Image (cartoon, rainbow, N blue to C red; front, side, top):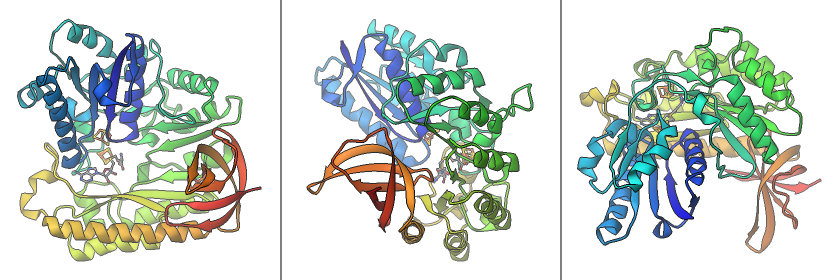
Length: 441
Ligand code: SAH
Ligand code: SF4
Ligand code: F3S
């Protein structure tokens, strides 16, 4: 067996692609290694959401290029969102790279590897804007987690938020066929997975491109929910104004669908939201969150926010902080604005916010997120919850299982037995900023 090392950056979509690449590579007699120095084939699966992630990818390639120049017999590949964008230009910047594979045709990997092994250099970054459903079933998927399986349902995005590179790196939005999704769900369940997370940049758009206008996310959820067995279903990410009442009602009605919505707001200021080309204002977002909270008991709602978008004033930034409080957002991912090539906002150079102001706003934003996360966790102390155990480890001399509640809260529970993959009822005894503490019932 030859060995492959893949460094995966970015979102769950990239992690899912990595699992598919490892599956394809297993058919070519490559097994995964976690140790880059042992590998015959080194791949970095990249993210270009921020400059920092792109820079990390190239410094990784630089290190591997050095090993190659020192005589190590290795092949090096660049995949993912940076690859899609840089294409052939990569070879000029990093001449030691053997192949560049974009996001549209990941199933060409086996052919590419054969060419690379025969000494060729390959770039496959054509935009197809089609799903590769016909190819997906031909290869196994080498899943990296043991309990939770990620399954993409849509690829790409049509929203063109002015800061975001995803529509350029992943192309137009397209939905995968329900049959292939359901097959992948059943395969994962047969392999023992207990939680299915349906992925898409905007999951509520699922099926918009189908002839059958009635087959949308709600219907897909119903079909997956009807599969026998005890397992959970999640879906991310939701675009605020695309969440339909039917979807919320379906999520409540179906026993396997968890009480968890990830609804990125991005900014608390209506003026900034408009400049971001988000199709809602603060009031509209508020109404949506209120509706979800009212209809879904015990729901957790999480968000994403950007600090220091071009032109953002101190007052507008403070509206982001107050939104987190006012809408009681349980947790949020945060980032300082990073200008991205090709995007509209990157051209507003005269409105860029100074780096030190961005850093300071990000720190305040993170503090607000921490504060609200603790507040949200404290609400659950004394409650009984069902957790799905994901991990068992010795923590400071004590054996502990870690699982997630249906609403995605992380719970640590002292336990002598490895219950990974099991559903366990616990009583919540304490709350920390990032997790709950519990005891077995
Ligand atoms: N489809 C999802 C987000 C995908 S990108 C949505 O619409 O919400 C993940 C997150 O990265 C975004 O929610 C945003 O908060 C952040 N992000 C995207 N572009 C960024 C940029 N140029 N600078 C900083 N953060 C960015
Ligand atoms: Fe990016 Fe906006 Fe699409 Fe999300 S909805 S991926 S932020 S363009
Ligand atoms: Fe990054 Fe591409 Fe995902 S840019 S966030 S890896 S879609």
